[in-house]
Amino acid sequence: MSTIGVLALQGDFEKHAQAINKLGHSSVLVKDSASLVKSDRLIIPGGESTTMIKLIDRLDLREDLVKYGKSRPVFGTCAGLIIVASHVENSGFTPLSLIDLNVRRNAYGRQINSFIDDITLTTNGIETLYEAIFIRAPKITGCGNNTKPLAYHKNDIVMAGNENILVATFHPELTDDLRIHDFFLNHFG
Image (cartoon, rainbow, N blue to C red; front, top):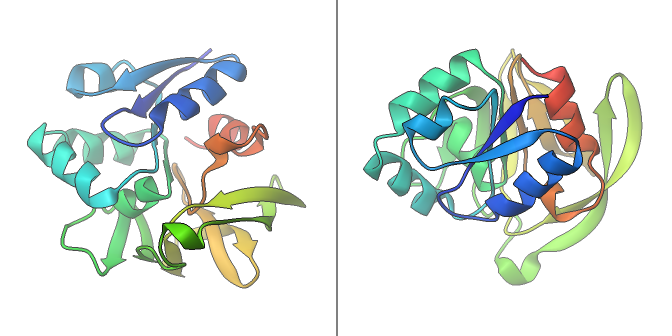
């Protein structure tokens, strides 16, 4: 059984912790460096990316998160994806650059433009449908050589990964379908 950290600075971190617990692992809410080192893997949840980066910097977590992400598995959803990306369009901050991809914030529009739709998910070499929830979602506009697309909504990449970083533009914690959390726990790192 692994201990999965969930960055608990802002956003719906509690839902991720519940998903982890349902899969038989323990979760720890990460609010500082001491709680970060207690985790085997880390989830950076959705929320508001500018606010989260400001809190990360105010709490002096940036260096620890970068070091952690270079050696341990990290899963970034929605704003978490923006935070771990290498290039972010229309932002006033520097992301953590843990995965080589380009991202555009709020690419699908405002909160009122949020939606639920099926995506094509490829995990373990098997293609399946997954009902995804997009809330003020970012859009992956390009992947680097070491980053592999793992899911699509129409022609848009909505999930990608490299050796130890998984990212999704949507919110898997808001569904009862635990396949993506399970994929992160069993195939990264």
